[in-house]
Image (cartoon, rainbow, N blue to C red):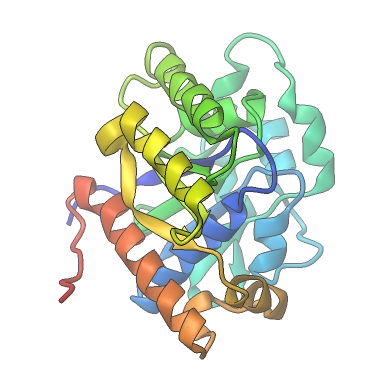
Length: 264
């Protein structure tokens, strides 16, 4: 069994479904019986709400305010998803921590996460849609980055910004962070515009672009609205998306020596 990978899920603009992807990966881990910790660093707190957590007593805002080594352990909360899915929740007041707060402020999350139990199979950090201090904190504490984009006009530019941000972190606060994976969300390959944007990304980034693409399906907002994992949403689209997120989880775990499933 390999190390416990910590993966930041990042995007350069809102509305591309970054939190949906975070919850989809968490759902795949949940369905497999893996133990997952979601850290919500987005002040919108959509991942927190999607996991069914209301009025958390202790949040990522408190964690970053304190930042003593290991303090994040005190903020880990159970979720209605089940015993294997935990969260460090977010809140709107986290927003004011997106500005730099002095020397080494981008290392506060890394310090706070020291001594988090190594029993988790994967840790997912849902970042805000920007390259501010919160995202830098996440990347400085991560083993890898998953860049989420969608097949629109700004996809190439946004992915380029995100990959460059990871490179900056690698050259400064976190030399061990792996090369980004770029994920296309809300892909409709029957649409010519989408095919063109997907090809642009593949031409620019080659193997960094995941062969897994998340299709646009109504089952996603439906399951999120119900507060349940996509793997528990019993519909043809739910099952299709479950398979997509299973493959994405495998892709993310494979470099860390974690067991993956065999697919026909």
